[in-house]
Image (tube, rainbow, N blue to C red; front, top):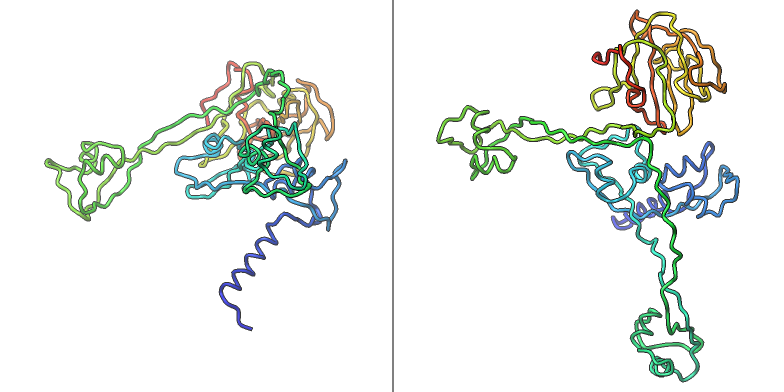
Length: 401
């Protein structure tokens, strides 16, 4: 049997809709959280769409309706990041991450196409019908309009009528009024205890440019936001600065980088203490070139390690090789603290800890013969610089990396 190109395209189109349609068959190991992240929808929308009851149990083979998410496409431009894009479209960063199924550390690249969620289709009617009429035999829009002393055009608008035809028994709205919405008292917004501070950094980058027919130094300088003098200096050009098609020139180009830093507000509800006394030999770094998501503190051997804040031990062991023996403590306000390169562990999983309790002793820093620990802080599972939350301490050397 021969298939035309149109027939094959139709089959492929039907296949795409069968995979990405509004229905999903639950697989073993699935959870509402996994499915919500997979399709970029909220767990609440999944529950409402499928009328799930508490405790919201799902099972393999179950068919779930996936609520449709309206979105537009955005092509990532040079210098853009998720914060800038979210700010441009006035949507939360978390919704862009969910809709595009981005993985940590949420890196995007120039030219990448992102789906941006929109709020279309969620508008509710702000009016309510306060007077209705049931159409009787022989009536028309004109006679009904005269009876109630209203305009025919208003009847058409209110009832969404395109023509003059109406049916016997049809219910028409004669008058409508705006809904009375109860004014909500404004609650004081609770500011988060940390926020993201953005810093714009402008650097110069030298690129190679091949002169085209009709080019001049002034045109090239204007195009790249530089000056004729700067181009002439870089290329050792002498007056009258003659250039020719095909000539290669060095051009200084401005490149804008956005650095993000998590900053603590003054009124954090509780404070972290230093887990050990010592000096910082490696700082927190999180960029495209290097990732060290905590600080290394060098100290005396056999120094005791203390809990930085009240909490509950959620991990104590040595199954994560990069950190040696490791302790992780969960605190209030979605904070976790991480203590790596421990020699002796004095706590166990599930144990409740008070600030200042001894949880172990220091071991050796990674790939060195010096004693110390790795210390990290996570907020909502996101690594943050511990120095933002720890009080400044005299005698600590912060200059080493």
